[in-house]
Amino acid sequence: MSDRGTLERLVIKAYEKADYSGQPLSQFEAFINPNEITLAYEMEYDSAQGSGTTNSRMNFKKVKPGDMSLTFFIDGTGASGRPASVQDKVEQFQAVTGYNGNIHRPNYLKVGWGTLQIKRCVLKSASIAYKLFKPDGVPLRAIITANFTDNSDDQTRVAMAQDQSPDLTHFRLVKAGDDLPSLCHQIYGDPRLYLQVARANGIDDFRNLVPGTKLRFPPLEK
Image 1 (tube, rainbow, N blue to C red):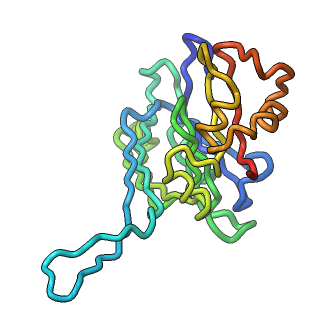
Image 2: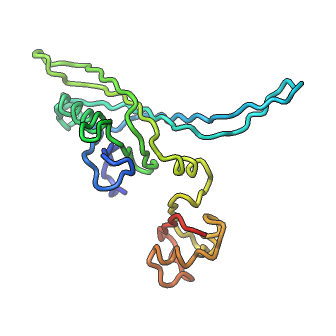
Image 3: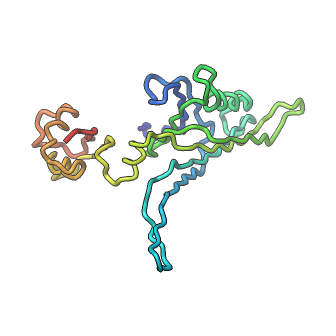
């Protein structure tokens, strides 16, 4: 979380491994944060229609990988108080999100900003519009419109489609009156897992949770 008064910028981090392990290969930081983020989801159904009926029953199959659209504005005029080389920023975006010869495919990406859930994705398409030029042809402003598609593995994507899924790590801020067994029951459906959660958070006295404490509830085997 940013300190109060500090502007947090949207960041795209690139990875070479499909499991996103290790340190990021490189990253792109938005020059000016987007004023709009579009998330698109699609559900897939099987339509079952009984013989002699006119209506079909839509049986849910799966949540298909979703898309995310972002628009980045780059200003090289200095009007924003942060002079930048437009072409350098464009090339940085292309290097982070584009084709990587080491893995013979585009990089695996994580996109994160503020409280938005970090999205694992890959670049689907991008367009660059140059809007203003110096007399010698050097670009002064550019708009990058980028579309990303979800790259979460099937297990993670299915878990994300389920409310309070125990297959994903959850975080909770302790409120007055909360106790660890009850929180474990809410998340895992099993209050007996409180000792494992206490160990995961380094809690010695699980009976006296301090309000405002952030607790991590990792995936656990029941």
